[in-house]
Length: 120
Image (cartoon, rainbow, N blue to C red; front, side, top):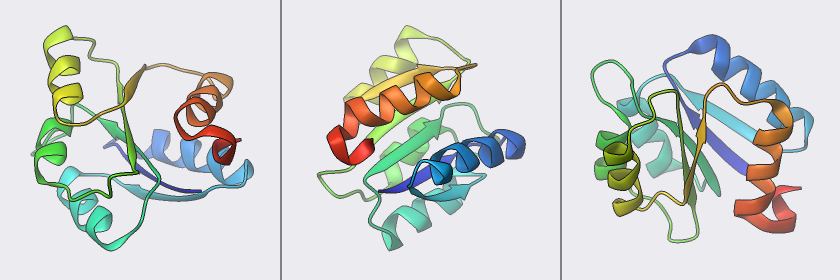
């Protein structure tokens, strides 16, 4: 499955990419929301993991500006747990969220839950 991870933490991007690639996914990374909007427009991503707090533009900006296929699922990944932000992301189309820090098993459970057997 094609997955796009959007987060300004490059160490986290590398770790998530490794886990997802090791589990059979094609994983791409963007370290800012503007780059992610361009990548989302050019790629057919089944799942997008999107951080909320990033310099310049946040996850809400990404959701407002990205063109995503109807079948794509977006999960907010954030350490900034705020009900207003979570609800706004849901209003913009996010399917769920993961609270940082999360472990490999939790990540893979969410991928499988939101994308079905294809996520296994």
